[in-house]
Length: 257
Image (cartoon, rainbow, N blue to C red; front, top):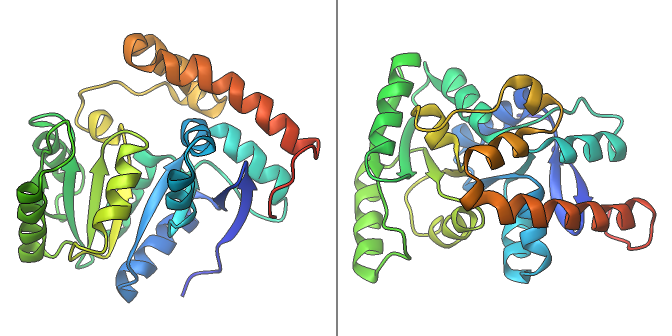
């Protein structure tokens, strides 16, 4: 059994204070024990989305793990949990770490998300890196909520395959809502919302250089790469996060420990 998960609070969101190794160990332990849950990889964007949406806040706080996907959350974790070995648990890195750790175990994977063809390309790319992995299926959803018939079809498909892990490649908060809604209906153990990891690992979109990731500048690389889609997320949400987290750090607004 893995060590207990320590948490800290960011503007009302309970975040897991850990590192990539600890997160991977917790995931494999959950799979072996058949402990159902969903994993959110959370950064500034998700935290701010939760400020205006109590239901989304509830979804984040209901996660099995709610990892430090962005460096601002890592810095806050180190401030609040100085007793812990804490580093970034970034969605794309966590995906690779889980595949590497589970490659020679009887763990099965399923990909849900991405534009047409991306999930199949992701499967091909990951099987090149981890040839003994068992990826049992993929599903490319429409850019809208599933109809009743489509949802039923997904449930039947997953019931036939029984994947241990379903990787969900949608955007925040869409992927978190999907996991919270469908986890009780799907014959699986864990669901992961890994967002852009589908595009990164399939080669569709380039990742920021590691030095930018380490210094909390990945948002700038992504903004320059996709300005039309991401300008609002970064240019509006980042200042708002700084304002609110300053209030938390100064004790102007209290949240549970």
